[in-house]
Image (tube, rainbow, N blue to C red; front, side):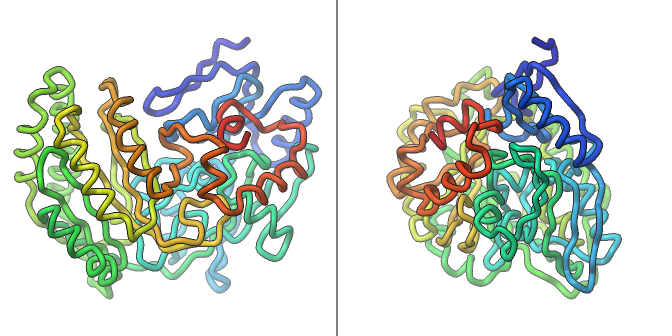
Length: 432
């Protein structure tokens, strides 16, 4: 057994694989899979470790995609871009911007590998533009028998629909083709708003903004809302000082120190949250899309996020608030709420339904199990779907009831990986 230890960003899971490999190209991935088969090792490709679950953990062969980091092509006229699996999203964004194009929507961080983000269902918030997987129009994969396949809506569509959010269970994704659009600016408007007002106005706020989300501060009735809308410009980005003050010092350095204090003195959390939520001031700016979508997140935490039917969002938030107000938990991290349109990706959390995402966090090193268990019961009571890369306790028996195409996806898995070469303990739980 190797001494190499791989762990997730939040250190929620670790792996000691039998072997590791860093392929330079698709042929190297083929060789690695074939050799693992000869040694009867299971194979997993890791990303940047930003999943909180053990979705990437293996005791067999661990593939690190750090050298699979090239943009293969950008076709502005066709509106497509093909990128290798291991390129970080932030680098992909810069390459797209240099060519005058952009992704239609993104999550709120961009340090994940492209494949890791897509495979676990990473999403942002949007009225019309969905998560990353809904923007993927083609995949290149290495299957368990060592064959290289390309799939799309026209070419092996069942594999494509199953494997876009595939958790690495259908094969090793080596390259992805995205639909891209002409580069655009976003006008960001951020301002505090009472939680009751936000919940009352949710239909209006969602309908009137291209991208709407909010952060609720537990133990208070306060939120910070974010409205991002496509703009003709001109660009008016934050000044260097304002960016440093708000997004580096206040949101990361100072926030980390505050959470260290709250971890040591939990009784202080409600007072701290009242002060923190009232200290926020409104701001607005206009910048290129990917700089508005994504932010730096240096503070370490553990997260659970569920996708619930959008029509239940307000009731779910009110119930989570009641749980916090009972006084059993001290929660220093804001609750994040985002939205997505329905999509056709079989294992997407937004599959065939308008979706609200509710994410709860606890500072790293703070007990989270009891709080997460209480709110998970609320999420599952309305048929919530757990984010594949974030903490949850659901198994196949539950997931079959909320994913109508799960059986179809598993039939595809039986075809392309009958011996579970790409399996692991997490997949054994969620897929059976």
